[in-house]
Image (cartoon, rainbow, N blue to C red):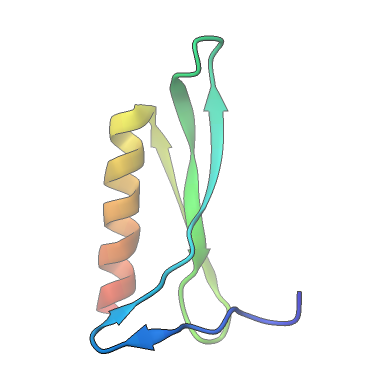
Length: 70
């Protein structure tokens, strides 16, 4: 892939691409994983590790908050 993805902006909104790496058990419950993606125009990536499905939501919110602050 040739560089970071282009960020499309519509007014004050923008699209963000996050990737998930998940470990799920036999009942398809989230055990743990990582959420992350490109966080700046230079293509730097940031990943947050989490545990459980509640941790997934918290990790996404933390990633978005850090992205908004940068």
